[in-house]
Image 1 (cartoon, one colour):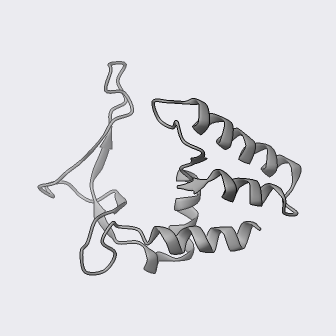
Image 2 (cartoon, helix red, strand yellow):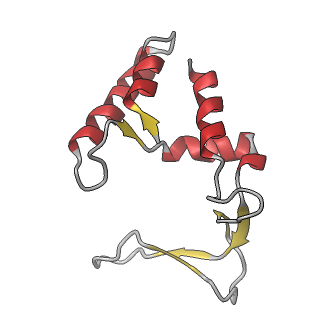
Length: 119
């Protein structure tokens, strides 16, 4: 996650006004949403995609088959991974691996590199 201090540091940089407004939206959302947030900072899901493309060595990934529930029920938007590997892979999934990247992501290095790009 990015802390509020990280976000505020980015706001002080030469980033465009539009990006600064987005950063403020993240800070406001995560502070006020006590279901998915409730902390001073934010989870940068979208930037993780870019980070994985730029620095794949910081991620442990596997090709796996994932489906997304698209119906109208309470599970709408839920994802399921084919753990038995019966289906053809359709996505790159970040996975845990104790030897290479224990949590699946070298989060500190990703955060450090993103901040270097954005500040």
